[in-house]
Image (cartoon, rainbow, N blue to C red; front, side, top):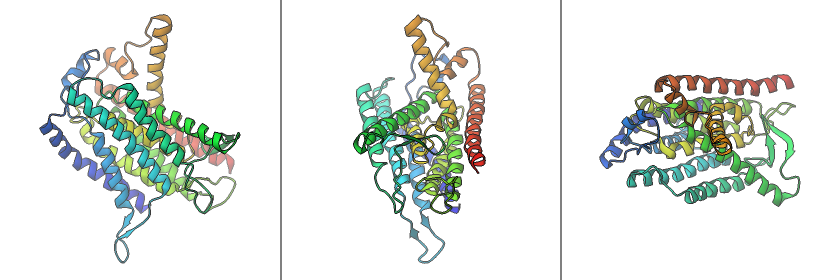
Length: 366
């Protein structure tokens, strides 16, 4: 538990005090956000606000994880514990997608246009990182022959639906496709949510906090330490809780500067990284479908875009004044802060609901 608290604290402090330093660096380099002219007119005042703040979130989380694994409580006073493969893979997914987002952001601000990487190049980058994660997640079995991920489709734990039913090779391919869908869906969901000051950051804090609790609970009821009918067959659950704590802390610190009026935006660097981390945690904690509830705000906003596009293509009419959903309420006259706070409330309700479902399944089964 000390490791989890230390990870969250270090990440929070590094993000909180590192963000203003990064802001000053970006201002000196004149790396400001480009604002589209077809969006809400209130956003034009944000033109030139420093972006790529997701780099601070990623850096603080990685540093927090490293520090949390360096224990200073016994001789020789510095004892570095080897990171688990589950945690390393989630951090790899986060940093890899963050790098793709960073390239996208950098092209936008250097060329002062709303489009960064070409769609093909961005998709290729996301695919390489996601597929690499999917392949490696089924490798590295521990002494209990558990790999970081499983070919079984999971909700709160692995179900009886096994993607490897047709053989090892086909099972690997199906799992990679399944994980790719989960990663793409969550990373794009956070990206679409990141349209108002602090909205995606605050919502992400709540989901990562839920995964801290899930990881700790799974660790306390692990099949390796406490075998039983309701134990969790998850590899490295405590270390995954540390990763979630790092992400929660770094987002919390960044939110101080990202809240309205934002001094910095996370950009695609942050939104793709956060979405990747959430998807990675869902896959490695065996809660792949539960993330739909835990991250319900991201799902709701993604669905608003799909509904808008589908309706316009089929009927020529728009359901919302503008998509994603938060911009619909902006055009309806809601203030930005009002929208963000109310959407945070919705995000918190979804996260609480997901935790309730997670715990209820354990109670019913005992």
